[in-house]
Figure 1: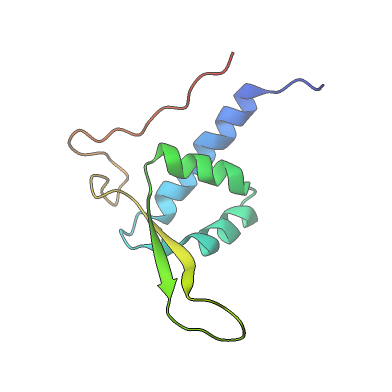
Figure 2: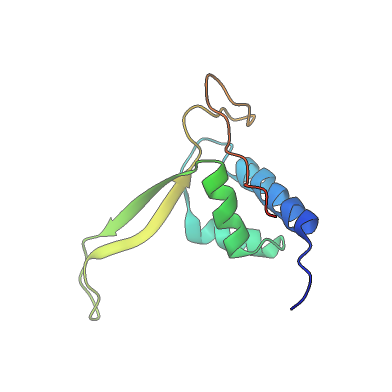
Length: 106
């Protein structure tokens, strides 16, 4: 089994958190699928982006489709992501909000 470079993993996670915070800084919800495509263009893996969203406490809202066409059932069409209200456009935390820290691995 290969050696896992945790320092590199943590740097990638920090970069993903910075990127995601900047992408959501306008305060508007963004489709998760679009964010994942943009992140991939920047070399950020989907799983790393998911971890970053969890640490930043990104709010995730389901978008439901009411249409039934071509055999598709009504249901979740996609997800909208946005920063919690306690984070302003500059990314600065206000009040008691603090992003969760990644757990250290042994």
